[in-house]
Length: 534
Image (cartoon, rainbow, N blue to C red; front, side, top):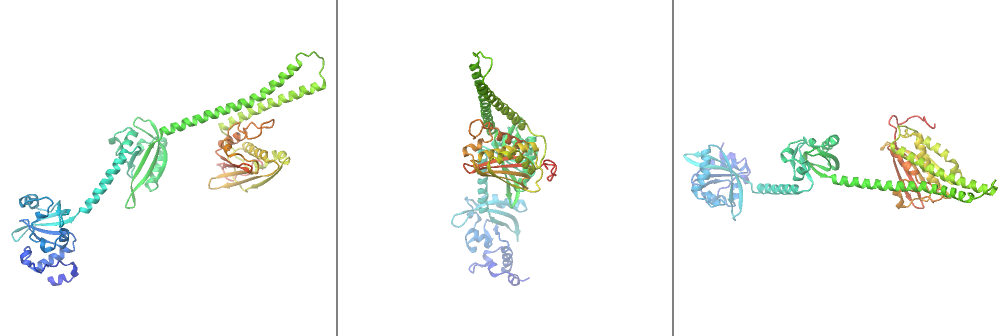
């Protein structure tokens, strides 16, 4: 193949151009003829890397265009230059020969090394060199294939600095930080993580995360791990772990997938010890229970003491009035007074009995209910029949909107009747004069719950009183002979919670109140026949 034919296969701008004032036989003595030079030039230009040929005496005998661009000098200015003059540090020929030429020659195969090259203008560039010794017509040369890696090293340095900064921040973080591989083994742990588990690094790295999870949290932890592995982050989840002494530690964790090239490669977990927070929450709950118990006892004492005090007062009045009298019969007027006093005493004692009965009932409901079911609409109709006298005596319009084909509710008919009667009585008593009570039922499939909603146009409840409506003995009704002891909604709340239901109350003062009860569906069948109140 002739040089002319070979060169014609490449665009002119890809070919090295010889300087017109530099004859080939004088400066490119490595080649016998211009044809050899042209072929070699065309071959190395398609490579893109720098090609430099250095004679044994340290002089450059050939460079390609990529190398000339890197040095910053024209091709003809580089030929016959000593390679040592481009090193960052000053170097003699003997030093260059011992450090580079002789080792390459002795190796008998290509070897690689990195040099710092001083280019035009004094800038220093990092060059990765692969060099090989070769002989040509009894002369010795070193052929070098070079690549500028300055920018790559700068990026590596930036990444390393970023990693060092991250590691420093990680080590100084107050929360435990773990990195897991996709099999669940720990590949990194910070100082706080070692302190949390009370273990050295050697016993944590390489171990599986399940090793330190409390057995009651294992299933949940594994499910969360699989979800994060698939790319779903977990935020502020709670579980229990155990340290090296098998102490139980409640923790809150956030787990995030680490991506590379669009794929999850590791999982980053930040763990916070929440034992102190849990202890504070427990103390707060205990304080709330103590406060509730204090109010409960005070309410109970008040509800029982006052009627008993009235009974004692009435009895003492009768005793004081008649203990010094000597009589054989009692007049009609005095008889009526004694009878009225006895009736009042009876009513007060009955109030005490009612209060104790309701307290007993409240205690039973809190203890739990047996599994029963009922048809909500049928129970509503039965409860309305029980309250018909109260409804007829008022100016209230009761409107029903009961959904068809409701599934059976997971609550007994007796308990639900008590709930509805209490809710309706509160609604009736809150409406003065003309007003409306709306009762509706519907099934919410997404929740698998039956909703019973009672809405009235009564007096409403003040915002500050809403949080207390379920407290025992709390009532907004006027004090007097007909006042309620304030246990109705407490009993309702206990019954609903015992059957795994929910109850919420919203109210606007002077506009009305809405009670929303959500009852779970009975597990055996969603469409049981009307076996009760049918």
